[in-house]
Length: 71
Image 1 (cartoon, rainbow, N blue to C red):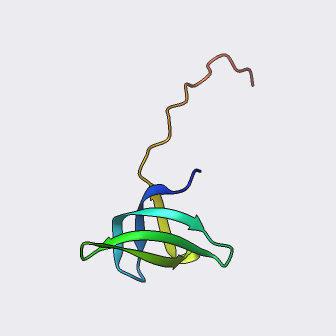
Image 2: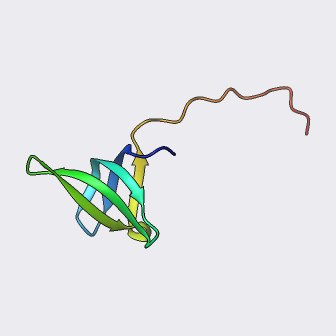
């Protein structure tokens, strides 16, 4: 994954449910470093990896299925 990346954030800690933001880093101390818009301004937010869901806004590219593979 390339950072920064546009993401949707899910976190009970802050009551976020699909909030759009930017993932800046995954820190060695076990936190996501995010930039979120609140009250018209961008704020730095640190959320624990084990209590936060991240969905990348850009979908994965389609990969064609190879039909000629023997099993």
